Image (tube, rainbow, N blue to C red; front, side, top):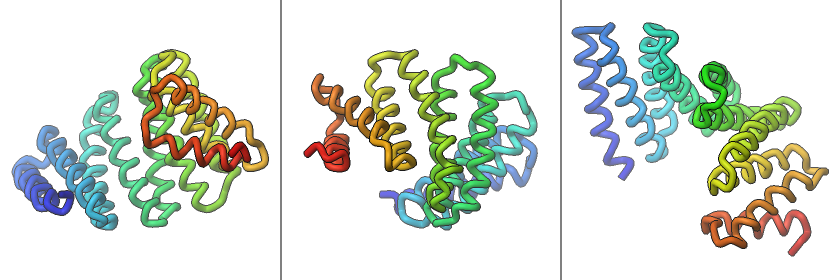
Length: 229
């Protein structure tokens, strides 16, 4: 399915380029280009062409930067630029280019921090920031630089706890906290507290019949690591 989407994505991007050739500063056409490049990058990534996806996400980032630079206080444009940098960073990390990924993700985190500061009660913006911090932490974890990655994971967990407290009993907020605790436990292998709390949250969801099936294996693995099986 992904491979079949690539020609359509290439066509959409080529069409946007033709329009831009006539009016290179048209913000509508620039946004069409970034949307087309994003979809093409997703298709290439799903098809396993990660190098090609990096090229597409670079195209997306360049177009998004132009749109955002034309209106620096437009939060929607800033969000799309951050997304482009994060998409490229994630793909570079999948190619084991942790340094290149980190450079992209640092930009993405910076923009998402600015977005989160515009409205500190905006839960989607705070969640986006938390996830970006986790992706940035991954670049350090890949290099076994736990001291650099740990503070980023701690920041992400703090944000996700705040979201959970702001929207209590929301299933996916609880899972986000459990996931963040599980991630942080990798930085504290001599302290079972994080993994224990993560397991407790998942088991609570399981007891009330709300746990999605894909997390059942998490419970089994956590109990095994903690010596509870």
